[in-house]
Image 1: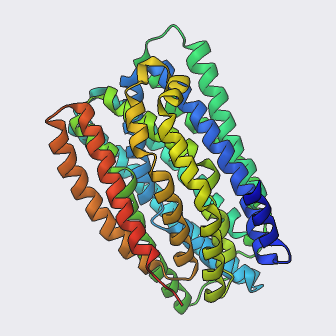
Image 2: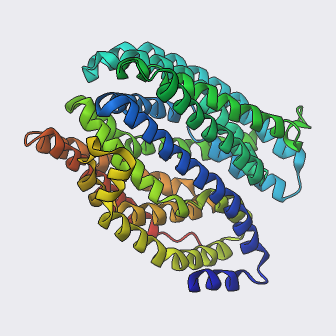
Image 3: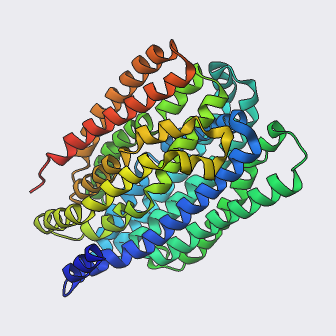
Length: 439
């Protein structure tokens, strides 16, 4: 309560911080719903598919998310940056021009990523030596289309500072997938084997994301961004967009190695069952971090501030969240066995020691996200791009070396090798971004 009281006293008479808190309240609501529903969705899948097929689905999803990065390449972040800036200046026509320009690029990239994933589905199946993953990759490619378009609409809502409808759209997706997963996997297909049930997971996700896409579209098309469709960007403005996208693309590609390379590399060396334990542990970690995902709410607000005010705001926020993230990490480490037992049951107890080991990532990820948002809001994406690139290289090298080394002991040990690589590379990234000054 003392921490909450301190936060409220800091906000008194500070309209900028009040706007951050307003955005944060909606963003927090969306994040809470997302993490809780993602957690429930994961529990439903884990209990209905068994560790082996849950692991294969998780591997397929990691591949889908990797291709989703190619379907974005920083366009979402670019939209938030430039559209928010123009709306802050009161230039609605120019904001609409950025929307039109970036939307065309987005459609092209989505089509390209979809076709590329379809073409590579069979080679990837052979690479993983897991034939059962092929239909999951095909359904995942279809899911990629709708997910990517929905993500772009979410960026437009963020640019409009309309976190209310972004939250509603997100809730539509999350609630739909939980209800459908329970109904289809536990009720309708309860007597069918886990391999067959696994084929219905991506169709469930496709239907759910269409629900979210419909909600977001109904709001965005009524905004000022769609009022003006014939305004064009100047050559100078297009070059500025390209410059920003290039650095965010480097960041996005590096993020690919940050977020999914561990699961993809593990998919080559360990069984689906081991992948299931690994995914179960990280899902619980992400659920525990639900209260600290405020960067999305900060970005459009910080983008409208002078650099010096940005830095002051970020310093205050970093001090306020410190005791909370430390307590969250310690609590998760101590209660890992209880958390795994309640969530997944005895079949997944091997995930408990791994969860304790990776709990420190709560602290690391919160501060990494905070400093990244600050630097990008200041219009310096090249800085985070370099930091992400260097850290991604470290992550790939560490994953390869540690997985290869630890798998000689056992497949389970290989999971700790991947987790160690993730922790070390993210610490390296945090050190790089926390030492940077933009003013």
